[in-house]
Image 1 (tube, rainbow, N blue to C red):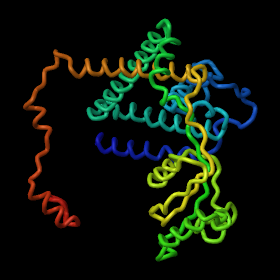
Image 2 (tube, rainbow, N blue to C red):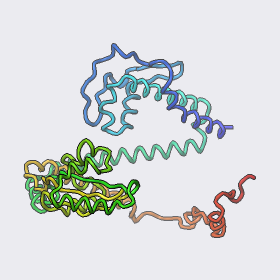
Image 3 (cartoon, helix red, strand yellow):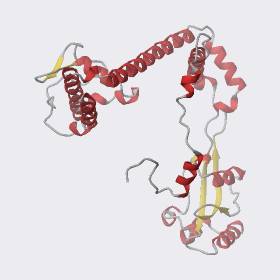
Image 4 (cartoon, helix red, strand yellow):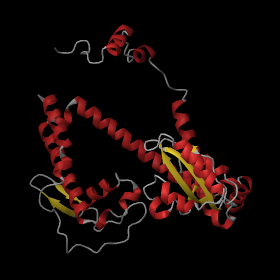
Length: 342
């Protein structure tokens, strides 16, 4: 009986998202405290943790419950959360549903069911593990911050890896597209267009007259400044091969058809001054240090010499399937699996 009730509770929890979209507002849209600028990690609480936000006949919802739920959101999602009363009310309704169903689980004995208790224990372990790693990350970050002469260390990295700190290279182009869907001789048309351009024809006018790009009649195939590597691989390679302003590519085959491209400008690519990238370099070094310490900690846990494996029991976890059954299922994928009801 308890197992069937567990299934019903799981189904009810699954409906929580629908619950949040209906019903009256839990809090008024006006009259609350004025919005405050949230901190990057966690918006400041408007009330003390013990403040009651609402209650029903069975449960109370406190400010601490709301704050705890916010911590489940990614840090960047927490920033503007409190600026929308609809989102606040939706979250409060979700918490109310969770607390009401959890109260029912305790009163009806579901919390004592071995399967449910095991799942609760597993989630507790997971949350405690996350909490420990967050604390460790913070401590490792403080260790890094206490290191002396980080400016000089950052300068050494800047000098050793100048390519890593270059300004993104940008290009301006004019291009013409002949699609294979529209032209059986798309490649020949592209070759003829290139010959005209090299001979001095106005490429913008030619693009307006012939290009299959939807915007060509307006922009003449001209692009604004953009990173050369934003284009698909074949086009990006062809753009990189255009060395001087005015160079015109050979026809470039793509999934859509054939392009002819002219380089109208190239800028960027120079190494940024150290003062502009110092903070970025130090942030990267800090992250690398924390990541390295975390990896060492996890390796120490996995390689703990005190670990004793009950190999026979572990081996029994492996599900062995008859290769012939796999072969038959591949030959007839619509067939019912062995043991299925017919």
